[in-house]
Image (cartoon, rainbow, N blue to C red; front, side, top):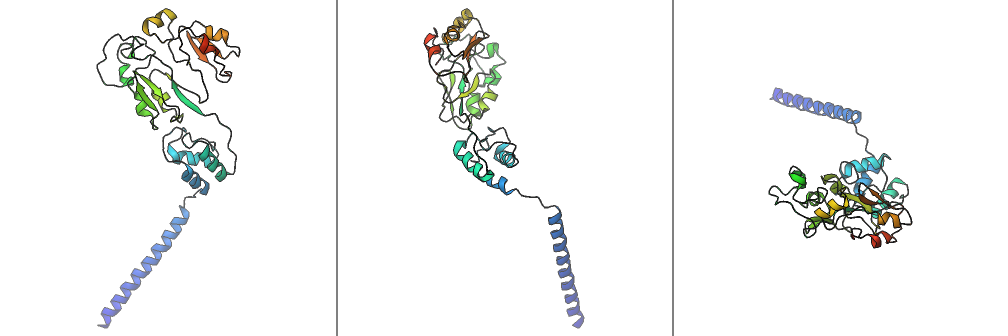
Length: 265
């Protein structure tokens, strides 16, 4: 009986010592391989909205939080959070919010079903990207026009784009200017412009006026009246289509008034 008790005591002692040794080793390993936690990064991450849209240019909110904490990204880098979130993050980082220009996406096409000429009936997957494998990149005669199959709508994480009458239309109040629609459009029709911009050329056709009119009733004919009448020199015709320099534009509206095809809206 005595030997049994002694055996149990020895076993208990061995187990106890083993536990102590393991605990010590784990403590040493934990100290050696400890990952330093940046308290600011954690606080910034908690302040971000968590959409993980990638509109900031970083891989989700975790990536942006790390970049802000390291000083690699501005406190106002989150397009979803806007000014309110930027103010909170600025307080965490002990900095001030730099004045930024709010932007919105715009689709440079007014070729609705009624105005754009169709050359054939497209049969295939309703994908702008896949439609590029067909003549003209889709049924429309204008090779530059909006295909209207909604790749941009599918890419928008904020529900800011709808397909209306054959073309993509952006709701500027919902748009966060994340740029995902810009990246996904195979015809490069979508541009980020200042939210306050009142005049936009809704055409991207590089064809000459005669060819434009054959393909669409709403195309820019490159006449240059908008450019010649702009007192600020904010409008320029490049590759047969008008472009507005928003840093020079004063929203006077002269370009819109002079446009004979009413493509500046």
